[in-house]
Amino acid sequence: MNSSVYIFGNLGNGYAQHPMDSNQSIFQEMFAHLKGKSMIATHRDTDLIEYCYLRRLNDNKYIGIGVSLNGIYLDNPADLFPMFENVFSSMVVNGEIVHFENNGTITSNVTQLYKKQEEIDRVVLLVQEELNKRDAFCEKLPVLNFGVANTDFKEFSSIDSAESINQAIIGYPWVFIYKETKIDTATITSCRGVFLRMNKSIEEKDRELLRLNVELAKMKRRQRNTLLFFFFLFLLILLGIVIWIKVLFP
Image (cartoon, rainbow, N blue to C red; front, side, top):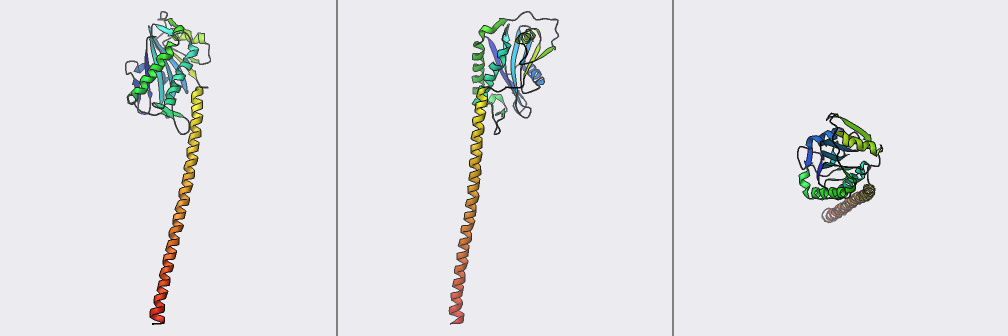
């Protein structure tokens, strides 16, 4: 399938996009409509249509994965979330651009995309492979309804009718499909559990190491105090001997 793949978002140092082109304004407009944790946004301009998955991270960060198609559209909107969520899941597991924080939340691991070119190439290839699996669901774009203003949009929930979503995607310049529950794949949920258990184990070992360091410090103080006691006892004995020999019985 002939497509262009984009990765974009705010990873902590302003807007970033790969590749950088005129679609920047489209992707930023999509983010302006991101109300919750995740959504699929589409934009149509004559024969061009963009499908984008946006996922909110922490501290108003977000990441987007998008594809741009020319003259065709995906006639299976129910499959959009699984398609993009699998790609996002792969990115989290790989940990180069986004990764788990200590508390199990997902955040960015880099502020600029150009620093992770190898990972970008991997994700682009993965998205293209996912699209190729869906060739059977591609249809030719019908003529655009020019009676609709280029600022008009439709909003849906991910559980809404696939048919109504599809009709909106091919007929409106903007469509936003929101998803608030079950936004993580089984892979992310499983990896998060492993990650949290590992962190808990590390924290327990750190606490045990701290306790042992405290005990060691106490032992060193006791040892130092014992040495000082015997040193001063030796001095007292030596002083006693000197007094005995020099003063009492010269």
